[in-house]
Image 1 (cartoon, rainbow, N blue to C red):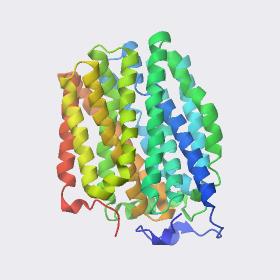
Image 2: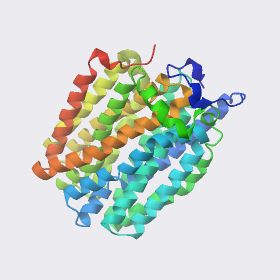
Image 3: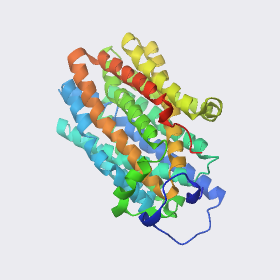
Length: 415
């Protein structure tokens, strides 16, 4: 683990209290910790993607109009937004295991609600609970990866973390689509709480991680350091990228399944098309380190955003399964580069005692996108059809590329 004093982040000062020095964990222990952390990712993200791609279809099957679906998905992100910063601070103060175990409980509760209560309001409640839990499933493991890595291994370890994330996202919708097509959505949602049984074991094993051995921002002082973190060089650009990418992911998760349903794909084929996004994301991980070495952080991120814009722009032109698989592949390739690179850059730009808070801020930006974008895309869809939402998304991503191409964006690791 890199010493916090060598990071390019803010000085800790009064925001963190020192803890007694301990012997650094052995490399084998860190590798075991990363393995358990990644195992939690494949289970939790698999549970997330068992439900999320099909909740819009489930709401539509219950009679909810498109505008209401967009509103439910958007406002269900309010609670995750409100707790994201404090969830990150709690990871810094109490360690990742506490936050991860709470997330497991909330995911399990949401799965039970989806399985047992066939009502629009209950689906909205369950979606909100999963959104809150997903904050914990993000900030806790990301802090573990940052703490268990050195500057030389950080991009690689975040790549493996994202790889396992994508593996869960690849398997979840395929299995859920097959089950939903044969037995109905409620039966497939039961997988959410079933997957939380082994997840609780892995979540509890994160307790003695390096993330719990650092000086930390006290939960009561978290707002004092938020502005300091955001003023660090390059952080604003990273948060903007996180916001834009989250808008694209919301379009993928909420309106892409609706579009696939509109053009006549069955639930099983919808699951495969959604899973292909994650399969493609996994496939490009092997190119991550070479991509950074050859193109640098800035051009790699800009290229990935442009690729996402192309994938959204061509989607309304496609009606058949295999061409749509190509669009899914392009969507996934973009995400495969943007996620681990932005996480690694964030960890390198902020001092170690602020990692949880920084990842919490990143999650907060993504929650803002998750609130605003489905409402906006829902209004566009209601007015002009779901195809128009993808054109708007493509235009927004191209605009982001132009903004980030400015020299003032300061993309890249701190020097």
